[in-house]
Length: 485
Image (cartoon, rainbow, N blue to C red):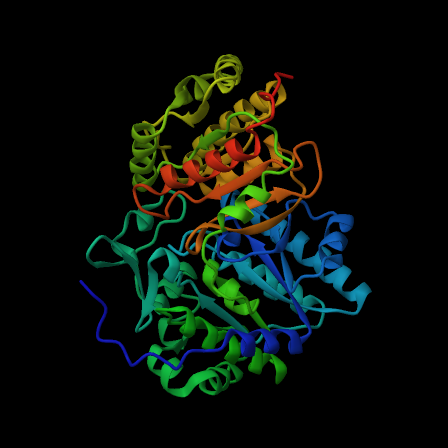
C-alpha cells in the first residue's frame, strides 16, 4: 500500500535560517545514541564513546553545535540501559552547569522503532525533574527519509522496491527483543507504555499542520504540552523535518523543555546542518592520510535480510576472503569461544597480507528461547566478533575497518579499536553510512565506517568497500605493506 495523498510540500526551508536559529538558541545539542548509527546523517561533529568527566569536557571544548555520546543501550537489558542513561544525563548536565551552558537532549533511537522506549525518555525526564528542570514534552520524530522511512497521518512506513510498508508489518516489528504491533505512532506509544499513555492523549504534528501552519503551528502545538506529554511528528522530506525543528526551537525559546526521541535525520535538522552528499573523492582520500597502508577489514554482525543480500553482492563483486566465526561453538563453552577466536583471528590476519578480508559471525541465525536469551545470543555473537577483530588488529593493523551492524559498530569501536573520542566526517552514501576517524588512541587515523544493518540497497556494501579500498590504495601506492605486529 501507499500512504494517503499528501498535502502540498512546504516552501523550502533555508538551512541558513535554521542554522541561525540553532545558534541563537545557545543550547548545545547532546545526542545520546543507543547505537553508533545515529551519526550517519551529520558531519563534523565530535563523538565520545565513554562519558567520564574529562571526555565530556573534551566534547564541550570542541567548536561544534553538539556532540554524540555512544551509550549503546539497545544492546543492554532495561535495568542496565536505565542506569547508563541516568549516568550520561547527570555527567553531561554537571559539566554543562559548571560551564554555564544549557543543553538539549536527544535520545537517538532506531528509525524502525526498535530500542528502549519509553524507558530512555522516562529516565531523562525524571533526572531533569530531580534537578528542577521538569520536561514539558517528549517529541518523537522517527522519520528517516534518506533511508526510506517516513511518517504520514502519524503512521510510520518503510520503503520497499515499489511500495510502502507500515512498520508494524515489517521484519523489524518482529524483533526478538523490541518487537511491537502498531504502525500508527499514537497506538505504538500506547503499546510501548502498556497503556500508561493513551493513544488519544498523544499530540499529533501532522503533515497538514507542518506544511500549512509551518513552524508557528508546530510551536503552538508543543507549547500546549505539559508534564512530559508525548507528541509525534510526521515527516516525508528534509523540509518537513526542518519545519519541526524550527517550531521546536521557537517553543524552547518560549521556555518549553523538550526531550527528543528521534531517528538520524531529525538530529541533522535540530543541529541546523544541511543534507550533504557523500564525501568527495578528495575528502575520502584525505581521511586516509594517517591510515596504515595495506588491505582493509570488513566485520559483519548484523543478521537482517538486507545485510545478507549486501554481503552476497560484496563477495560476488570483490576479491575478498571470508572468515566465518562459528557461533554455535562460541555459545557452547568458554573453551570453544577461545578456540574459535584464536583460529579465526590467525586466519584473518594472515589473509590481510594480500587481500581485503570479511570477518562475520555465522550466517545461520541462532534465536534465543525468549527475549532475554536472545539478548544473550546477540551479546556472545558481538563478543566473538569483537574478540576476533581485536586480535586481528593486534597482529596486523588494517588500512580501514567497515563495521556492518549497529551494536556491532559500537562494540568494535570501543572494545576492538579502543576509540574513546572521534569525529564523524560525513557519509559514504547519500544520507547514510558514516565515516569516522579516531581523535586519539592506538588506532588514531584508521578510517572507520559505521554501516547499519538495515539501510542501503543490495549493492551498498560493495559500493562502500570499493570506495574505501580505492582511497586506501591511492594513498598507499608508494607505501610498504602494513607490517604484521
